[in-house]
Length: 558
Image 1 (cartoon, one colour):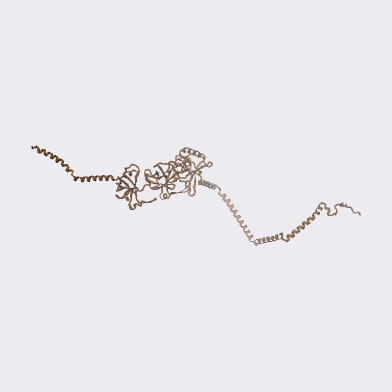
Image 2 (image 1 turned 180 degrees about the vertical axis):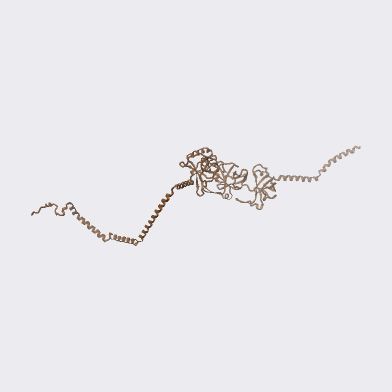
């Protein structure tokens, strides 16, 4: 009996134990649990809806404000600046920005950021819309794998987008080519591209420029193209005369780059992106850079080299075949032992490519042997004046078979000596010097004595001329001489009157004509008598021609 109550208490304890958990799951706990779940969902949804966080670095944060400065692409908001602070070394600013959702594909290695704000440049005024709204950061998406989180903000907007059709090439130049980002790239004065990047390599001491050429002008760039700086106005006074080259107005104000294919080279084949070219200082240097295979010779000039400069032409009968490389060259080097005096060394380059010979057909050793043979036949170099206005000189190569001395092979600083001869002003100077030497060799004293005698004789002659002149003046001053013209006029007048009296209409002329007629009749009448006397001279004494000649007889009284 005693065990029955205990057995009844056991089920009640078990029921009591099962009822305890029901009190722990009371409905009052549902509200906080749901709130926690909603909060976790909101946190998750907010995290899921947030874009990536990126870091931007720039030199200074001018115009950038945390919480208000936007990041835009094609004028659409894609992010916002959250924080602006300095870097640890205080050398630049670090900007933390939150991007919008679904912008992961924009954040690649080639993406570019720059600040859009009011700017005044050679191309005009830009960014006026930010005067009231404030500056913002422009994002230009690039190509490549997404996932980048750190970017550099540029001070200038890019020249062209990364996917813009065109050609990007690299230029290498020495110091002195002052190009800036945004400078124009021109072809025959027309703008076809821009300078994208400019960087200076301090180790190599040269400038690196990256330029972009728009399509379809990228087809103008080939492996024969040469690039040079466009200074706006290129004025040259040299042996070729005066040359003026004017680029576009934009290049005139700020410079730039221009390019072309030299006339002596073929058009060439198109090039690929990231091809590297040399950037020359001017067009002449670019043309000179095409002649990369040449022969070097040394001129030992004994005359003055004033007016001869680096870059002067080397011509053969007016055709340019080379260039002066240095004036002087290795000035302190030892002179050849075959020379008595000191000569100024000038380094020249013979460039066969100027004659239209391609690299594949050019044999420099053969050309060198050819020149050495021509040295023996009178080929010589001389300095001549190319421009009287500037006094610029050039090197003229020609044959002097009769005047040239015998060729003797020489070397100077391991270079073959090109034989020279005096010409131009130097030759004239030599002739004048020889003339002066001949004049100095003349015996001047006998010449002066003879000259003095001639002067004395000339003075005596001048005295006689003075006396003759005085006598002539006295004769002219004589009254009779002065009246001579009047008398002569009177005589001529009388002669004229006399001649007028003998005219056909005058009475004297008629009388003289009648007398002549009578005389003519008389002569006709005398003609028979004259004929008879000619035939028989005695007819004048005897009446009959048949009478016998009388015989003379003595008087009878005797």
